[in-house]
View 1 (cartoon, rainbow, N blue to C red):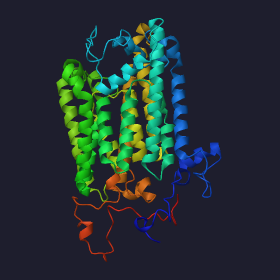
View 2 (cartoon, rainbow, N blue to C red; view 1 turned 45 degrees about the horizontal axis):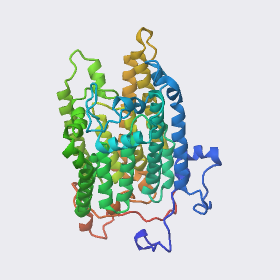
View 3 (spheres, one colour; view 1 turned 60 degrees about the vertical axis):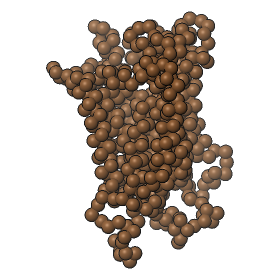
View 4 (cartoon, helix red, strand yellow; view 1 turned 30 degrees about the horizontal axis):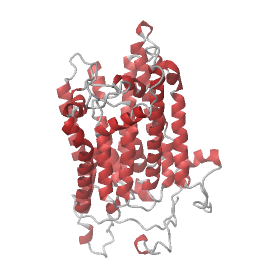
Length: 501
């Protein structure tokens, strides 16, 4: 049978991978809707395409997440110090409507705020998102009514972001649209979606990943630059991209991406930087000066030590750990038997950034979910990780209920919260470990086992290696007749004979 490279598209379209035929958990779960998809099922012949199904499921789960916030919407945000925690429905959004001057019509970054926080402590594009939502919020009625509306308007805008993420994740791997159900059904995604405004940056990052998978390096860079203008974490994706393009010799695409990212970030930030520098810089100074906070291993250390680490020590050490993590990822990239997939390294880099940070807020799981789906689309591992994140989601609110309920101490004591932190960190480390294993043993990677090379890799997909660090000769320098030759960079033929898909 001819390989995929020599088969014209009009003769043989790539076959869609059916998770219910390759994943035992997906197959078992499919019994609720009639069982696994059969080989002769007429996919793509009705309105119910995989992407549309995934988006509708994602919207449905998002709506359930809104329902979960109903006790707070009805009053827990406004009455009682601990009721919003005992109901596990806390959100920053309604509290910051008045706390950051939106209720008074103050302009973010330009107008100084009363109180301890003198300027809005979010990146510019997130500030624009918050401001637009305030424009759409009715100014009539009491402040509670306005805060309810502000949360509701933001929830609608964030739902659009969730739908964009679902579309992008489902389309990034052309042959694996059903993997998007992992994201759509992720409980931690639904529970944390409206805690803060992180979904804006996640949506832009997911769109950037889709553009890169289609070989559009400039569009990828522009979207990644916009994502970085909304949240800092997308910037770290350029690190994995650097070492992958280095190994494949795809320097032009990498510099196009960097140029697009820098240009987009500057377009958003320079106007505010020039005319309101003090307000613009607040995000960066706040991030630097912020103390050790929830969800991090630093908090366990601090609360169990008579001599807790200083903020300067934590900042320096956390930065050093991120650099060491990147160097480890670079070494893994250059020594792996087959070039890692972009989504795998992107997940590892963002996870390293979060794990070493002085704060690991519950909504940070949103950063990882789309990347985890693309890096390791295996239901068992994904659900193990999600269970850890849901446990932490409950743990942090019950801990805050304990600390805000006075002598009643209703909730989870400090020791219990530390165990919740440990579980949530171990869950992320577990997923990192299986991704690293897939890189070192490509035959365990479910994406490559289905016959693909790097479907999210764009110009990297199927590219030959140009630079590696290993004891083997470069593949192109090996004699064709040698039986030990492995095509490290190229995809396997899409023949599924004898495969269990």
